[in-house]
Length: 307
Image (cartoon, rainbow, N blue to C red; front, side, top):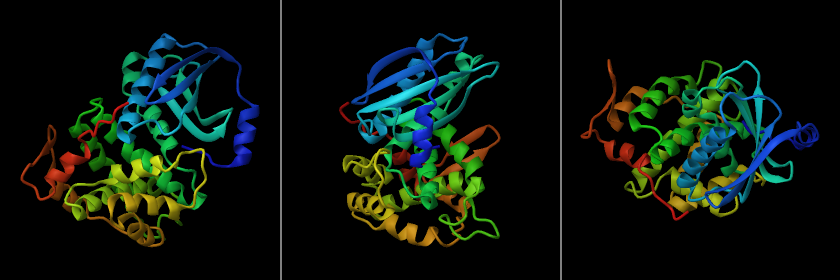
């Protein structure tokens, strides 16, 4: 979750903990400075560093490169806890264009670390300018949607896994009875899953309008190529315009105009059927003859850049 408040950034930078160990590594055209605060971890630090590098690879593969040239990542051990517990990302903090703070449980196992999604989610946040508070849902929606897609493209997850997760999670993003649109209704479900549903629908619509030649990935890569990273503050209109120009459509601008102030329900069962996604007793299966099956496949096929 990114925090764009300058006051919060300044306060956070004055209260960084003492660093017990630091290592830099190259990934995706960027330098990652990984700092470990004092505290015990049962796993070797090298395994946490490797997990961060794996997450960085997925994000760099999706965007063509990591969005900023320097990223500082602070790992804070948390006693008597398991797993990657929480992550927060800021722009222009602690002397770095992007600063990630990760709270990692002392007792985290290799299996828990390998299953983590938070590190990838937080790195995706570096690939969008900081937006006004009313559009926080787009920051979280992009990170929630791109994180699993990037991991599939990097062969870190199976396509069946993420489509099953979307089938389970996307209903949380549907508008409620008192909803007034994504810019106005800032509940957890609408911020994260509603934002992710916006991204999925935009991805599908862009691909439909372009004969599956372009997708949301092209729009997001163009935003990064134009300098749109977390250390910048841009109006949303600029972000959407750059994305639409890259796909030669108006999908992002048109959808935002509607979804931002209007509760837009999505017929998710129909969408899954059109994409050829079926939930069964033993997991998700795919129907290659479904009308949008090629779009589903294209979303998770990697477009490999030269890193």
